[in-house]
Amino acid sequence: MKVPRLISLFAGLAVASSACARSDASSSTDDNDRVPLGMRAVADSVWELSYRDANGESRLRVRPRMRPVPDSVQFVASTWTLYPVQGYSTRALLGALARAHGNPIAFKLGSPVDSMRLDVVLLAVDAMRYADGAFGGAGKGNWIEGKLIFADDEGEVYLNLNPTLGRAEFGVKDAEYGPVVLREISRLRSTTSREPSNDR
Image 1: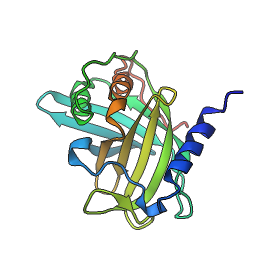
Image 2: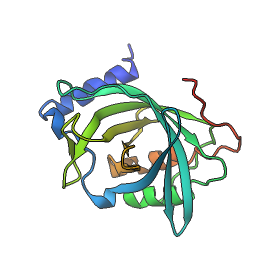
Image 3: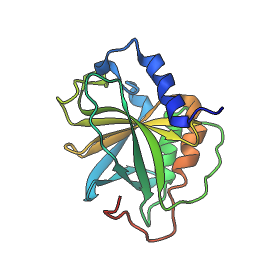
């Protein structure tokens, strides 16, 4: 009998992380493995994330479903929804993500979507960020640490948010996930004018 995907995923993660204290959970601490983003609120519980370099500017929106992550647990399951922003290409962001993942030789563009609802491992809420880039001290800071799960567990990437500072970032979970992460993020190039509403 097939084990439900989320149950299998979180059971495996619990085993892998059981030797770590709750405050030690963190994404990559190497600056080369992170893609910094601007962040601003655009609607109720919806934030617009932006990345800009010489190749242009990319924007996407995220509606995270927040849940408390007490010190007594390693993580909680959640769902976040990503949206494309009309008039903006994912090209610049894809280039930065490719570099962070070690420049995968090739990846396939995914089919465009108006929204992408993802399973998320929510690792920290209102956490501190230490000098080495790691997160900890739940309830003592402003960072939200989430790990996005793509395409039936074929790819993962961290998406960390700080609404107070207006900053966010993608963080590499594993360079081998690069082609899947790039393919899925490339799908956020809808040609419609649909915007995320306050309906959940």
